[in-house]
Image 1 (cartoon, rainbow, N blue to C red):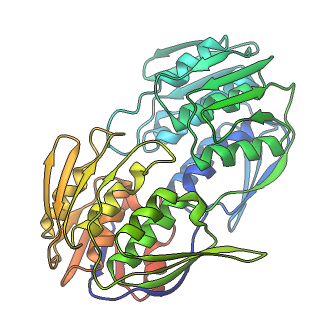
Image 2 (cartoon, rainbow, N blue to C red):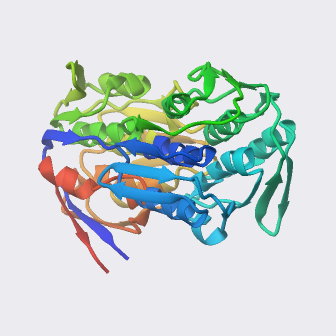
Length: 421
């Protein structure tokens, strides 16, 4: 099993290109199931989760062509509306095929998903929404089985804010008979990006980016082209990497507009961030002080501070000046990285969903284990300033969400290498 070895001490400087967003690309890939015509996507990142989704779509009968960051999908010969456990077990996003399959094929059999062990992420909101739209849905032998002749527009209210639930129901509603109103909808930029892709395919959607989304169903969607938005969590991770090392880094192909809460906290920590825009591109320039100030955070649904950036801020708080409090309100099991950061010398006290941190003068390299995707990133960030070498094991989590992270960090001056077991 691969591991990363990080030698701390280097100040990051230079320029790095941010990849397309995994969490936007995955539902957009599933949108190809809604049409019999080709859908072409660009800025699709090269990640394990993307590869898994493409294999899943291919076994359903979707023709997949990939060249670099360009992917063309043709679901004209869709003939196997099944998402088997073997492909689903490593990736929760695979549940996103459920809505499109029921809407277009009239049936779906989707294994209950796996993914990172960060807490309960039930799919009951997906099921309840489809049932409200007239689908017959039940769970048997570990699979969600759904059938419908044609879905009917309905008023849907989710009991909790769910990004994948919003995306699944929004896609299903595109081919439903009548208007669907999704209340308490997720407001994340990735939801907006999916809506923009669906609109380019002929869908009639309004309200994406607010908590009420309206979808007027149409008889069919056509093919189209769409560019996947930049990855705001990769952006935030590289901002944290630059910040913890006192760096001076420009991130290209991304925008501060996706990360207001993160940008505000980095500025509170003492960093200078400048959003730069030309006629052809956007970028973020971060200049960090020699030592950061500790910042308290509370995770909450967008546009508040993202849970996917909590671990990275725990890493930078580990060596920041002062004491900070981190409250995790999204997932009940998302402090597993704290124990690994403690192995590096971090002063962290956990009480339920609250972590209290006091910054230390220095971290020391050690062997640590990645427990989930963002925890992996936090260990890389911490390793950049730890004395000696930090060996990060189980980095297959990292490869699910960060494209070529070691080569990108190396280009900024970090000492980091992959070792194959």
